[in-house]
Image (cartoon, rainbow, N blue to C red):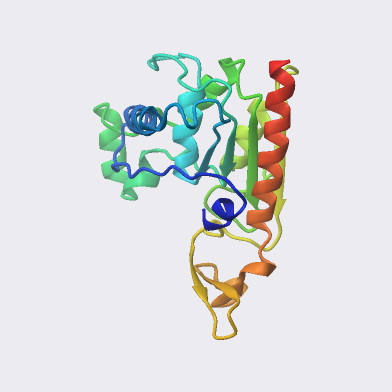
Amino acid sequence: MSYLYGQGYSIVTAPFRLGLNHQQIAEEIHSDRAKVFETLKPVHQDLPRFWIGHSLGCKYIVLLESTGEGDFKSFLLEDQPSILLAPDVSNTYDAVKIGVIAKYLDDIGQGVNPDRAKLAAMLAASNRFNLTAIVSFELDDVAGNQAQSAEAPDFSDVALISEIIESKPSRTLLKAELADCKHLEPVGLQVVKSDGSLALVDLDLADGFLEPVRDRLLEPKVVELLSQLQLKLAGLKK
């Protein structure tokens, strides 16, 4: 976020509660964000708006752009491009981790809603998602990567979402995959080293405890994708 701000983007973030009703949480996130933009009128009224999510946050963005399939009311995002960083769809077991409890919650209808299968159906039925980009990580053992089949037992949410979005000729998807990176690549604490340079205390120790910001590939790639999405949005509005 610091990097994006330094490139001239304004950043709006809002905390959200944890829970299993992902549909409701997604709607609450949208409501909180709408309140922020209401206070900023008319200063930012005509500026393009983008969504960027990581892991489970990507699922909330996908839900907000879905078009009313199943129990979901209606899509809430229009002409607002999104970048999904290592999207994790998440079923009840992913949230609870204790199989018998996860099964019980699903059996009584209190598990994750929507689950992976339902979200996949919503994506497949939708004609939207033509302003979407996905950034995946080669060594991601949570969301998977582009090379893994979405049909495999150790499924890849990255591959699943990519394949469904690209299944309709009317939709195109921007994709990038970073080599030698794991699921938590976006997460870290920026610090100033003794020589004045910026570094990241990175949770992915494969990069070393202090990773020089100048060596990172993720942030420049996100800025590149934002520029491409903005051009694509401008083209669609002509």
